[in-house]
Image 1 (cartoon, helix red, strand yellow):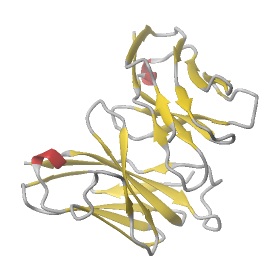
Image 2 (cartoon, chains in turn yellow, red; image 1 turned 30 degrees about the vertical axis):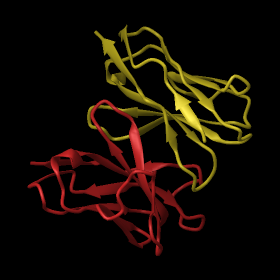
Image 3 (cartoon, chains in turn orange, purple; image 1 turned 90 degrees about the vertical axis):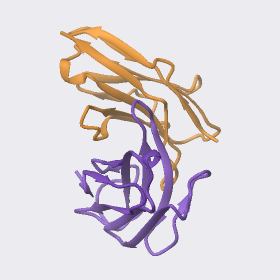
Length: 114
Length: 121
């Protein structure tokens, strides 16, 4: 069974700083998807970024980028120029294929301080 | 992007009553819907997977008779918490997956509802 591990329960940085959230996973699949979700106080799950395992290039979405290391089964999220609105819970998620379960990590509570 | 709604967004009920939560895909057909439960400061826990027109598949440890799931149409799935107790108080989130021919984006898309906060007194 696939597992996802987020080893940082909480993180706190100052506004405008760069922060990296870590995520590791375990799978025997060769092709899959990885996601980072943001859950603000409203608790709506918001997709931040996604990575397809067969793509070697790391995904980037504006201030958000990932460091995908397939051999190491690592998928970290980097937030550049952090903003107060980035304060939220962040979940790393693994998705093997269509219709399968989306496996979540434990989450990292990120606080951006003014 | 595709939109998923949940109703109600917040419900308070007395212990022993039943509560129904609806999950609707508003602009696409969802052949599969997933129901999650989330306790404060914890991750999402998958409760069950429902496919339109068939019985739901429950995760280990989830009581089928307590959490009734119905997926009668391609746009609606319901979760009924029967004989609710205070320990059932939680945040319930649905996730809808579009059918291959149902529109709503590529097959790896994940569409979450906004969630329903259930408080059982």
